[in-house]
Length: 73
Image (cartoon, rainbow, N blue to C red; front, side):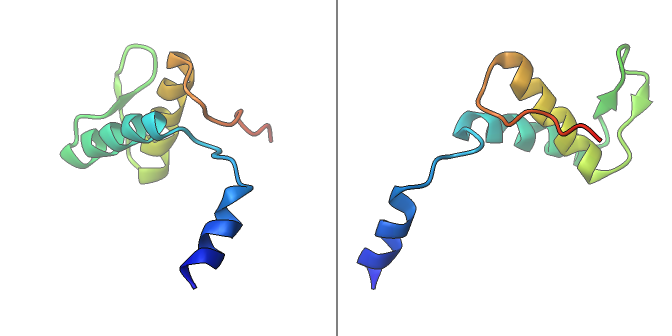
């Protein structure tokens, strides 16, 4: 049974790099502490978990890590 699971994973590629995960994790940790800020000057406080994740992903993009492009609405 373990062989089947391995075979299915073989053809897949990662959408997000493992290193981008650490950027998101650190931003969510800052959000939980209450120290996460948003905006250019960092004047506004991050109020939602989704917002914290989005900030973490954008920081990963700026560093050049493998993260999909932002969706346009």
